[in-house]
Length: 153
Length: 343
Figure 1: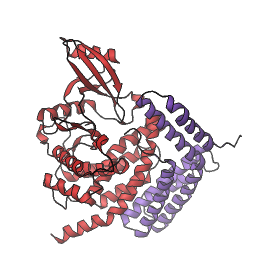
Figure 2: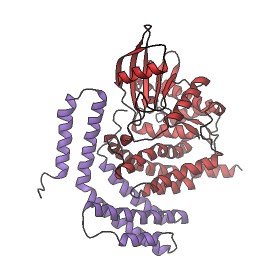
Figure 3: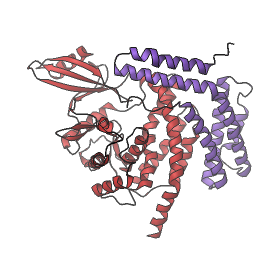
Figure 4: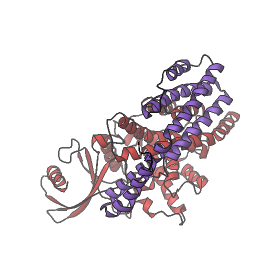
């Protein structure tokens, strides 16, 4: 495995070349907009390559803990116990991306069901904690956007 | 493509012949393929046409109905309340142009957005923009195509809008707890009712052409529907936060006061809190199509730079939705308290 340059570095270098070398040679506004979008996509890839497994692992632990705490407080919460059983059966042994994504998705479902129960029951503390987890997730998504703004509009 | 357009024009105008002298794609829209063509007819007259068709299915990001858009464009043009590009011809089956395609006049004049700069006094433009929104919202619903869905009542319409959040989330390849949270929040924080009207669905200065003769010519009607007028206000609030300068945010109270005067709606119905609420409702209507496109890509059914690039829009909107719901919880509660106290 050739670890350095990292995937993040490689993707950023491709983005730089796209803007510095390819874009000036492109003719037509539609094609230029496409190149600028590809630059953004490459920068998205760079951020995700650098952080997404760590972020999903961190969020999975927090979401799973939330769902288990809610189930303790509200054993009747619809679907949460089953969703947590699905998390238990997730492929958690390794760090291959597909496995991490699958576990993250199952934990997200358990969390969402638990959060809905907290909101429906009017549990202020658990709703507030759910909001904090949503903000954590959203913060990672924003970082992965790599300064995105609508191009060509 | 110019030859195909000439073939199409020969088919729809059998007594005349046209030569396409220029043809260029129009950038700026994210959903439809659009082009501007200049043609010379055999009697020497010239005209500019705009073509609006669907992208290839494998590259479709946002799905909408060209048949419905064509019918609406015809109805609005015939009624005359809102200025729209003159609809000329419709390729309903793609025989000549390769896609369902609306062919309309190319309106002379700049897009309103291109005339706005941060430094100038935005008030005149804001006033005109408000007036255009009010004009759209005043369109007689009886003049609209019979095929256009008519909600039975406001409450069930709003229920359907909120259900779109959970339905959209259910169709995603992975869980999006933000959608589930906002749906729960919307159910718990309903605003006062307002009359259902024609809403544009994507009202923004980029979709207004400044025509010297007709004033504001409103284009891109693919998301139009009968709905709550605050959806357009909320949509623009959200849109203009990412694509400025905003004609709303520099003086929201003046913007909304003018809108209330033009429409007769009350301050309880139209205020910053209710517009904020509908910014959530309105943006999902558009974002749902983007999310469906991303889901289709994850399933291998579609692809392309546009779809991948717009994954960012989901992250952006997730953050905005959380921020907005947090900020509006207390103002909407205050509105309900006021309404309760006055009853």
